Image (cartoon, rainbow, N blue to C red; front, side, top):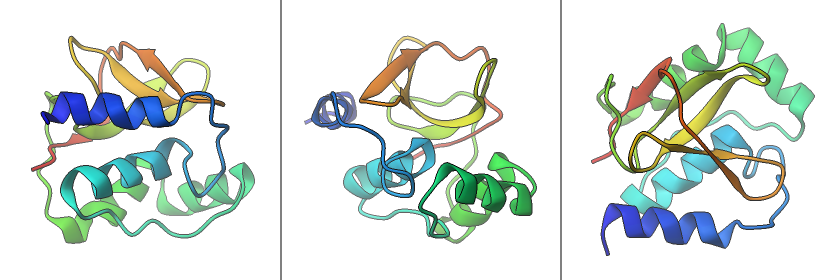
Length: 131
């Protein structure tokens, strides 16, 4: 299958599934996607709640810094133009910085309360190209 078809199958498997913090929230789901798509994933620090995640993010200096630290050992290239299946961090008006997986035609998938929400980011704070 193509990266786009693999991504759509991944997204469909999560339809209606409620978020579990530390397992499949917006950052953890990107790590899970990377594991399925590439066979490796960042070593995210463990957390079990939104509050624990917020403390870890604050201690890291923000979500982008947290991701950069987790991805450092994977030697992935940062990009200004993420392609289908690439991962990154986007600033949203209502939720602040969140992790997303790039889809097609300028749209990206964000892990919502149950399933994914398709959004069109204006810009990425940071993004990484997957091999």
